Image 1: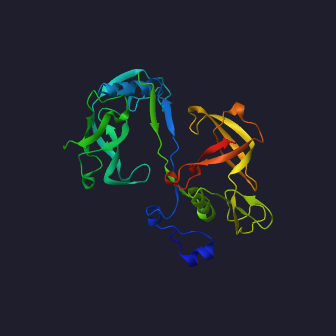
Image 2: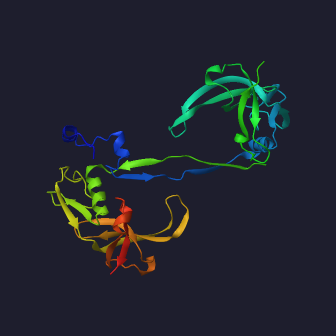
Image 3: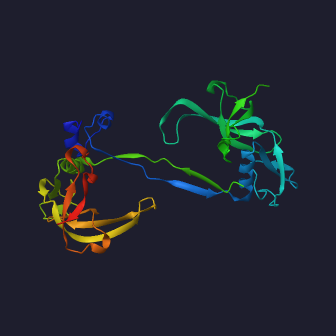
Length: 171
Length: 140
């Protein structure tokens, strides 16, 4: 064990160095609990995801608020109307906000930073959280025009990741 | 319609057993079950650095026999993750000074409280310093 004797005596602990985890000096117990989940999408999000599989972005309209909502939902959160009027919107939009992430969800460092962004979809009053691609992180600007890059129809599974990312399309 | 979205959450971890725990794991690697005994009379397997009863630091280690008696047992039909598994018998085994929880290679219906069992270690080269260096306890 790569313990510093004086500190061990003082604190009754064993200081571990980064090397301790690599050189076999300390016995390690590794474990990975399986935290699988499955959530039911419900009617509206279910249809939205099925439309993604078909390569289309589906939104839902609220006639009383005159809004086109994306992601679609069953009820308007402003006027509480039940929503049934589906429309397709374009797969283009503008960057509303973004973040450059250098670590993965499990905090491991990423070789290439990932850019997550909220994209306001053209022809709608909403936006979706997705990734940006084919762009240098330094060049991302709020208001930048982007377009969805889709997986091929054979790879699409009815998931938000059926869109690979959004890429800049210039003015 | 897409009815379900499935995924997983990665939560990997690495655990280090601490001073007393490390000694226990190194003991297993050598094919030994180690314990320690506090001056107040309480014994621990696996060993602890401090007595949980009187809070003294424990310094007296001992090597436990690898033979004991079934003190209590249970049959597990599902894994930690809730998946169905071939039923496994888990027992608390009285090995003299203290008790150790481990697997039995005896079907639940054949286990009797008080039955004599002994630890079966993996071959030396397969041991890693893990509680699983003991494959199971078997009847003698």
